[in-house]
Image (cartoon, rainbow, N blue to C red; front, side):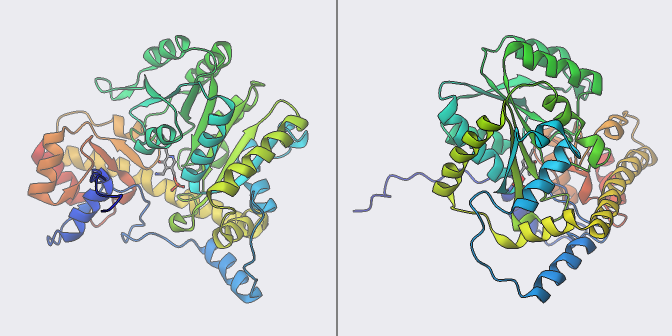
Length: 398
Ligand code: PMP
């Protein structure tokens, strides 16, 4: 007899399932807008020049591959923290901020969740409605009850500010609130600067624990502007957790490069917190991998490579913006009278297109255009070769 006999078949991941379906589609005009990856105008995942330079240097050095420290490479952590908090931030200077290298943004969320489970075992976690699907999965697996706060208003294709604020105010003290610091996944809808100020005030007044997730820094308005929400929360003088990811901004998805940053009340507290985080990491995977961490660290800490990276990142951001503009224009050209201007206001890689489940299904079945059932499309997968077909197809299914 097998101990696995009663194991049930889990449902397929909806987005990965879509990819499998796409891969077996034989139509030449097929387009995959279901993914969460940036593609260049040739439909390829780019290998950034800054990354290539750093990799070359690493290979030439024939660097040994010993274990990294449990919390990762120190210059990597410093670089990741500086991107979030800015140069010479008070919290960094005073030793109240700590950063550990993690296996992508997912790893940062998981280490943060496991740690919080020790510190706040009875707290509830709230995520936006809708949110990145793995937010729920990660916090539930860590043992938390996960609820949602209102976020997206389908009628306006915009942000439900009043709904979110009212929900946050009604939460018990100590509730962990997961917030997308920029470029909300899946909607592309972000609060305004003024709205963020009120959200931050509410979080502080209600005694909530903000867990900021920033997986798309650089894809909104640029590296500095996109960190403004992180810096706003850092100025509140409360405990903050931040998961950040270089998967998208360095186009290093498979290297698992991320960071977990915690803002503490004192240097002493920060040392105690770090010691506990190390236990969480040690018992999960012991220490992070060398290659991606070294490459990112080299770029972040070499002025010429950093400058090159900033330019390449701007290139990705501007190309996505251009695709938004072109999509809206081409929909008009193909006779669509419905207003799609909201796509221009959305930020980051994604757009909640407003397409219904039926329309998404028709797009796939009749035109080979793959989107997520929720209507989410990855604008970063549009290019000069496929955008016309996509716009024409959307016009037909509307
Ligand atoms: N948070 C959000 C909101 C995301 O969209 C993603 C990537 N899809 C992540 C975290 C994690 O990214 P990764 O683990 O690939 O770095």
